[in-house]
Every structure is written in structure tokens, then in C-alpha cells.
Length: 232
Image 1 (tube, rainbow, N blue to C red):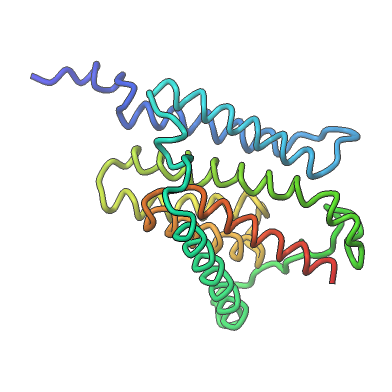
Image 2: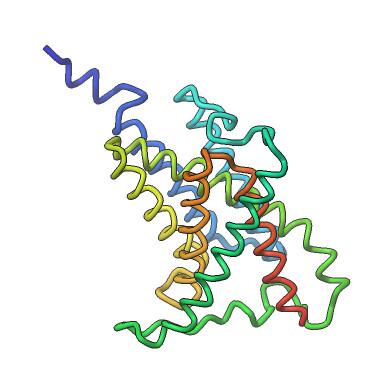
């Protein structure tokens, strides 16, 4: 006879992973809504991501999981890592171009993307000095987002559903949707574009043996290209 009460309380049961996700997402989205006087945009974003990674680490320890188990380990083959990174970046660029071509055919109207106005980062147009002063923070945030979304969130969603391969498909899709929503909080061109990026990064992470470094590097490259676009 199965003790359903003990099973529900098990730290590796779906209920346990649901609890973790509830705590994690509550902290993540609540902090993003806080107003911190005098704190620059990027500093606030990085602080929120560091807090989220801290919460994720806490819940991972409760389940006996390390970041290395989720793919944060030394690349076994640098060349292969760079190839996967390059293919991922190209796939993202193709998906964004395809969306730009087809977006007018969608049956719903999307809010315009206003993220390129530069207000979040300062006046970047023609300002390489400003770009160099913040690019390190941009890369740090790129790495933290991969730990958060492809590392913790995707794997915890997969464990919550617990029925592969459908669990993996749902986890990749849901983390991409949340990734897009977190960057816009509405149904806009930006949320769809970022969601597509999250989808490609999620597929790359799963397809390439759940290694985080290729998607971290790809994310850094994509954000660098985005910042350069603002400069020019």
C-alpha cells in the first residue's frame, strides 16, 4: 500500500518542485516590481537576478542538486562549445528575422517594441565609452539569466511534469513564455521576440547535453549585438 501522504511530502515529488517554483517566481516577479530610488536600471536588474539565483540555489540544495548537475561545469571540448554557441546565435537571428517578416500576418495585434529607445541604458547612440562601461554588467546579467531560465526554471518545470518527453517539451515552452513576459509584461513584439530567443536557447540547452556554457556565451553574444545596434 502506497502512503500518499508521505509521497506528497517527498522533497522530490511534484508537490515539492511546485513549492520551489512558487517561491522562486514570487521572489523574482515581486522584486522586479519594486521601486528602488537612486538605483540605476541595470543595477536593479542584476540585483533581482542575483536574488533569484540565490533562491534557486537554496531550493536546489534542499533537493540535493548542484549547479554542476544542471550544466554549469567546465566545457569538455572548447571547439564544440563554440560551434554550438555559433549555431545557436544563427538560429536566434533567423527566428527573429522570420518573425519580423511574418508578424503582420498574425491574427492578433502586438504592441510595438520600444526597448530600443535607449532610456534604460542611457544615451547609447554613438557612445562607445558608455557601451564599454556597461557591457560587463550586460554579460553578467546574460549569464545569470541562463542560470535562472535554462538552468533552474527549465529543469524544475520538467521535474514538476515528470512525464518525459512531454515534460521536456512543456518545460522548454513555458520557460520561453515566462522569459519573454518577464522582459515586457505585455503581449508585444518585444515579448514575442524575447520568447523566441528563450525557446531557441532552451532547445539548444536540451539538445546539446544540458550544458550551460554554450547558451551563456550565445546569450552574451546576442546581448552584445543588441547593444551595438543601439550605438549605431
